[in-house]
Image (cartoon, rainbow over all chains, first blue to last red; front, top):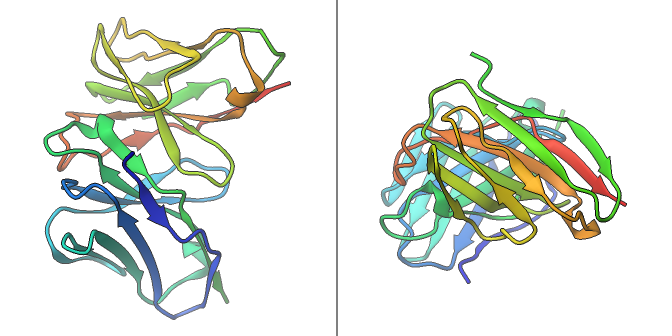
Length: 114
Length: 115
């Protein structure tokens, strides 16, 4: 059974701080990794994707991938109250598979305090 | 473009009833997906489709059926509703389904309660 693990939180950070969200996955052959943001009562929206080891930056967001450790993280710099949401980590389920194989973690709830 | 639309937004069913959740996308995407999300949990894939006439099971298909007669529509059918099917259902679509780079776009969801 392929699994994606996240700390459910809640993770509370003050406004302006760096929020660090972590995710581990069980399937060593996974190749693509995604971070979705989900506001309460809303649908998920993709904020970052990463496929290669290392860092990928997009504005205030940085995704970090370490395939050897089977670990992917999301850093949010200068956190804002509007970043308060649940962040879902998703992992492709197998090498060469379509996105029908996406496996989601349970999500980490982030709260940014003004 | 409306993107991915779902109807109804909310529904209460009695045990044993049936219903169809509707999903339509206007982005000419080939791939469409149905997920369920239980409280405090991530999304679990129910069924997906790679194009009109082609569907495949996901992680949790039992108790559900799908069809894909057109590119735009991907309805999800619940037969003999059970309390375990109480959940929020999300439909999503993507252009190519390519596992490295494709992006899934989600509809607003249908909140279903089975009593």
